[in-house]
Length: 357
Image 1: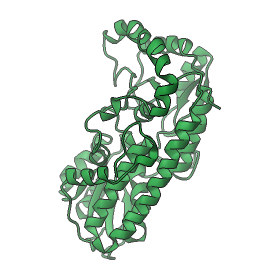
Image 2: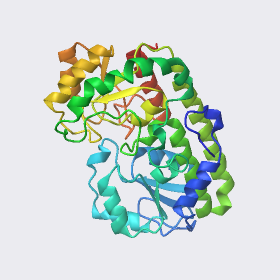
Image 3: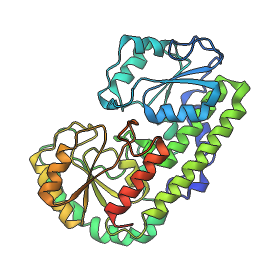
Image 4: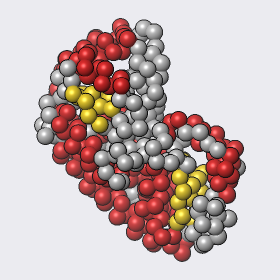
């Protein structure tokens, strides 16, 4: 299937998945793997070790009863901070397939390389099959190009270079300057764009079909069902964020570039890609200016990272705080039990913050 950027969700087709698997080299697995202690041993199932929640969820949804899935990142652990134990490296070496997202968790990248696992599937390769490097930088979703295109050109296109140009050219801030509007290659959080997550799902279904041809039809059926749900979610975001009063939202963590790009929004992050990065005083002053100019109402924080910086900025600017969850893991504090429930909670939070609901 092929998700064309900025096209209606119904255009998701199978070409991107095939391209993604071609990019990975059409891996060959055995349905009866060597197994791990957690995966249940030699039970005839494809043993998948996923690096963290979004990939674990996707593997379980597509694999169903024919796949045993374990995760390296336990609930409540911030994925960026994950430390890999020797036992987990051993699990990787014995897995039929390691499913990870290169660039998100350096410890996992190292463990995958050290484990010698032959079938390592990088979700970024599946999600980038259609777009290429940085391909999501082209333009916002079609629905918003019509509604906000002139506004972006008049209000944002000229103002931002003038107001940020001098500051951005100064001393760089740790972890990036917080400007990440396009969902480019520097932001690994591709699952927050439902269309990219659908591409990963389709590509992984092809991978499982290669691993276990006897159940290929089941994997395709499960992937099709998941993609349809993602199409609906994408449409709900596009429709739900219409008629907003501002395009700009402030977050503690620059995790929402792909989501912002998909729906024509502007993410302003207090820190960078690393959620633990402390912002510079210059960045905090800049955010004060942005919040006032763009009529920002809310500073978002997340469940797995301290909310102290967000609350400080909100108190200084008179803004509200709310949760926008990057869905790196599900805990008791999450606003839902799975990907779709939390994403819909994110939509509700964005609608309130942007004046759409």
